[in-house]
Image (cartoon, rainbow, N blue to C red; front, side, top):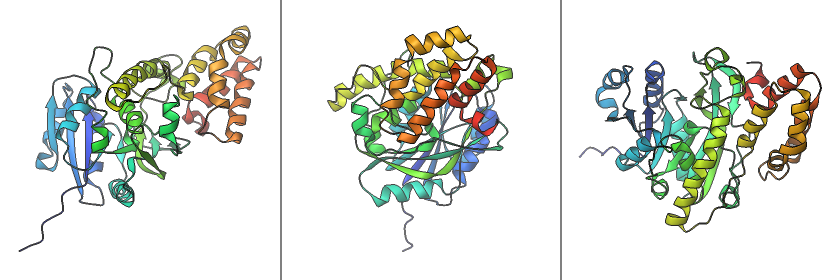
Length: 345
């Protein structure tokens, strides 16, 4: 009798909503993995831009799921009802994977039974898919992240496409409640929730590409401070607190873990700092430093994931924002707030 093909170890789930212009590149990258030990699932969240035709053109090469528009949280919930592999990787429809991503991730999981998540860097590319020379996250450290989370610290993590999960662990966090103010940000619950359940493996290499397609011309004044696509940086900071509240409830009810009332997150504090200081007068900047900077500087000085040289560097750069010339101060703020500014983009 012929040998039976081994069951796939990893499902790559692509969640899509109206990203027809990028979707084919994402699907092609998932199908082009160097290992055949992979299944590809595409969940379309009620797109109206021709995405369905693109998905259907792949035929049986992908498992296609079409759901009414319900948001990313509903898509993650739906995916985890269907996935039947030990591991899952959620790829955003505007991002891409390098060919060795799946093999590298599965090898990492197979090398240790302790990992609940494997995270890796992403190469940042432009809207047109051109490399920028920037990688995210800057810090890939994940040792002790579960312990730090219990103290409220959000650990350095890549965007959603830079993470793969052990399915049985993720199912202890999902399904996540879908409410009017909790339809997006499913990757927040996956990234931080799963780390409460075990160790996170950090691979110090880029296994995919993160596409940035915001621009100052289309998103308005101050968008040069934002690095994310779906929400501006200040919206992300606000949503982070709301999502933490939901995660806190999940952790208490399902895991019997008590999390602090509010998270400690430099990314959120950085967004608030940038919005208050960027384009501000010298008097306004000085007022922020004098009265409103305490939590921001705390997430620098007490940050358990940063080295002392990095703490000193970020502290020093922040103080430069008190330089009287607004043009110089704004340049420093952009440098702190947006990694692309450091590469001249």
